[in-house]
Amino acid sequence: MRNLFPSYVRVPLVFFLIFGLVEYFVDSGSQPAFIKFPIVLLFLLLVLLILIAIEAIIGALENVMFQSLTEEGKERFLASKNKVPQFNWIKNIYKKLAGTKPIEEEGELILDHNYDGIKELDNSLPPWWLYSFYASIIFAVVYLVNVHILGNNSQFDEYAIEYKEAEISIAEYKKNAKDLVDINTVTLLTDAADLNSGKAIFTQNCIPCHMADGGGGIGPNLTDNHWILGGGIKNVFNTITEGGRDGKGMISWKQSFKPSEIAQVASYVLSLQGTTPANPKAAEGEIWVDETATAPTEAIETTTVEADSLSISAN
Image (cartoon, rainbow, N blue to C red):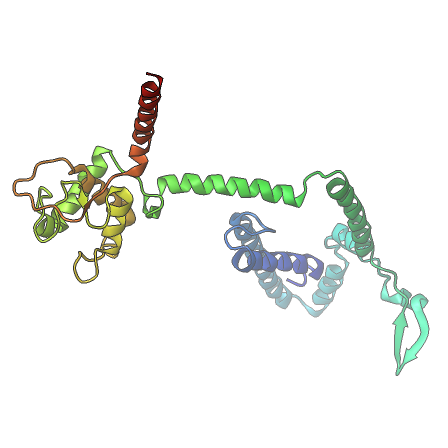
């Protein structure tokens, strides 16, 4: 590519391609910071391959043509080729940005310092570097005034906004991700589809111990309000997940079923309460009462008793 595409064309292109690949595969994963879309990388790679192919074809044709020329023709071809301007506008821009002088004029820049034949040039800073430095100063001043003085677009504010957005996204995700349910987030399922799924799992795995109607066999009766390890959706979910009493209760099912499936089974088990099995087993455990559900009733009863007491005192 030396003849058709000079180094000041090839080097930036190759650097940009390599840097983009590093950003994509190493630094930022699937969302690179410098190059946002993988299609850009593919496009650059395709362009580079096309340029290499074009130069290879042109070089091969030139070689074939050059070999067929006479010695005089070869000299004229080489002389004309050296005179053909290639990317003059790019060369001019490159020279202006680099700010270098041609080698013929380097004698004007040589200092008096001489170290073992090594001479020092008094070159100025490249314009591209100098202008970039000035731009960074301007940017720093604008950033300082905008963020630290006026208080606009503070990183702390951006962090707080992004944090709230992330919390909302996580909450929405958890609503649709049923298998993230645990003992703290499980709720009683009442949808017919969930209960039918829970019944199918119960029928396939729980009948040997609890009977098809939940009346109990080896395991306890699931239709009464007595519970060995506590009732309610959270306790039943935890019992199915972690298993029953050591050496006595049922095994843990968390390796066999997903959390969403355990929630379905637990909800189906609770739907059996109050039903009448064919051969109910004697009650085991203690009567479990949902305190959260009875709290309002207790408050009403307490208020009624206090009112009756006041009525009696008044009489």
